[in-house]
Image (cartoon, rainbow, N blue to C red; front, side):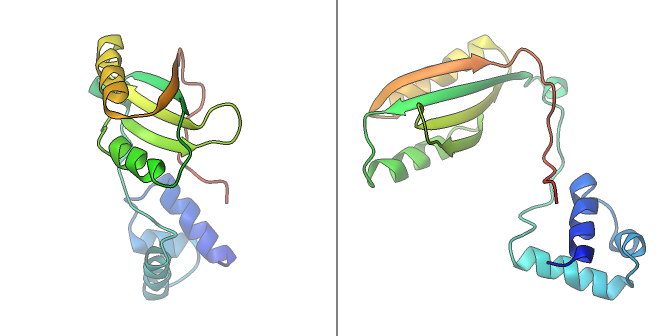
Length: 150
């Protein structure tokens, strides 16, 4: 990836709705070569998707919860089953397999405490082999970004 492509990616990370002609102008390319570079970045999977980022508070999903999970199972059969189950929960925006004290970390977004309680009950009832589940509620969002530091 060259410097022009990094500049294209930074522009798209800031505003995915920007036109190809505007991107081309900003990176000093003509429209067709710029479009080809964007297409190549998409085909390579570097650009995974173009989305609209929403303000969770304004759509009644202002509670962020970080859920730490320890499991009794670490075999190759349990993880795919766990991953498939987690995929079914719309409230889970991110899920990571971790090194250290906790095996998994989830970022969950819900409307309120009652909605989280409902999610929690469904989680523990649908995932076998959980040893410990601990939740931390975010009190304030200090920084949130989807922009990678290219």
